[in-house]
Length: 142
Image (cartoon, rainbow, N blue to C red; front, side, top):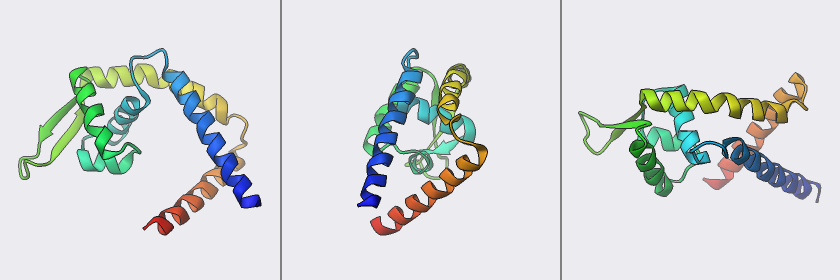
């Protein structure tokens, strides 16, 4: 029963964090998924569509729509792979990087306030425990 309570707490925490992420982005023109794509491309550099899907938690079916929107806003650029035309490479445009950096400070400050309740040691422990749970859940889902 105790582990079930932990699971419920984890789900509720996820809901609250998601609400806060949406709140931190509410005054921007980006959705959470759009911001996540910009963040991945900003921090990782050019990625193939599959690499991006593997890095972030957006289903393949939604990814095409998100990429279409970002491309229309001129925040990302798609390039066909020269060796395999079925593959695309994605990168940020200058305006995409500028928008990301402008929004990132607001978002980062908002998220930092949430995690201020943890000591540095608790933060490390939390990361380790979440990785441990995530790894086990991944093993069981294969």
